Image (tube, rainbow, N blue to C red; front, top):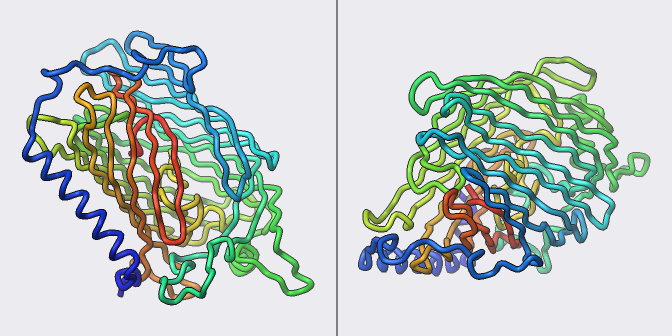
Length: 423
């Protein structure tokens, strides 16, 4: 039985959320207006053009370059600051779709460096699709154990329970190189392959004290399955199948996206085991008004499954470790981890101003993970979250928004600042 459904706290929260959703949907049905014919689109930059603005934009024909700050604080990093640069572009043909490449550099008060490079690029009149995720982290992040039951149902929680009470801090360096190349074999359908390299080194498990019997989740897992708890690799090749009919991957108004990636990890170095990992993803964007396409029901779900062998602890499927680190709003990255993971999110996107400068969203998401060592199965425990967001238009052609989301989860909450839609 799904454990969180008996939780009165979340029942009341979701009743309020559902009422808001239905009210907004009703307003949409009663006021269908083609706003583009009433007032033209207008970006926030047409009002604020100061050089000391919080973002810097350089418009170029058929492309858009954006820099936004990355500022905030969380237990794993302390205070952090940096910047994210995103370049959106397309070819000269009318049928060419927009591509995205971005770079993010962040430094923290714990002397950590986080360097991210991501690409989703269409070439040769959309006939070649590149998708990449490169990371270099001098990093720390707590581990919380495996399975979504690490946070017990509220009725079973002791007074004063907090997620920090189950956190086990860890420092490590992480090098990631994932790049796939897929070729269009039919309209919108791509087939290809990729290279996947993950290297974890200089692992320091801060709570580990073997002589005194103080063991950790990471150490126990590594010992049980024969991985060195100080350094390990996971390197392999993958088969990639993609279908993409979205009109715009930056901010889709209709169409759907599906991706199946099957990864094969042979033994190439020490501290490796033969393993296979399946990743399957689906996104759909459904206009709910025929006259105003800005009312959109957006759906996102993905699953990641270790189908053969064992992978190192830090390479197990975990929330917030998707390509753009957008999953699991309401929870800290890596909080829920397991041998298998399923995630689902729903957003209702709606306009606030007629000129498209401001829009909003209400959303909810769910995650479930498994842990065979404790006989915890997928969907046995589900952790929900919900929230709302504001969108500010900063480029008309690419429909790029500056997005701000606030989300609540079970004993958790978070604020998110990004460019482009969550998914």
